Image 1 (cartoon, rainbow, N blue to C red):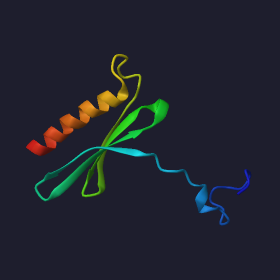
Image 2: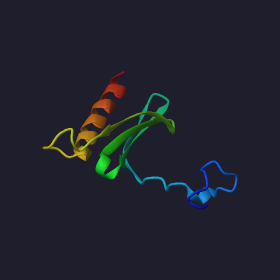
Image 3: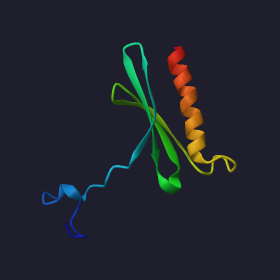
Length: 92
């Protein structure tokens, strides 16, 4: 694909797509018949995102920007938020 060729061109190569970001499994638990999974996704300068999946389908997520708190890194904020959400799901 040349630089002046549009993205919707029929000659577009599908291997030009971005690589998926590596994910880190934070925890996994069962609640009733549902399986929940929480993963951390590192977005580099844009922070860390915590994502919840229910039965392998995206449920919700939240990104923590480095500018939110200067004393705690985004990873630590994401882990704290994810554990609170896990407690809320388990007690519901």
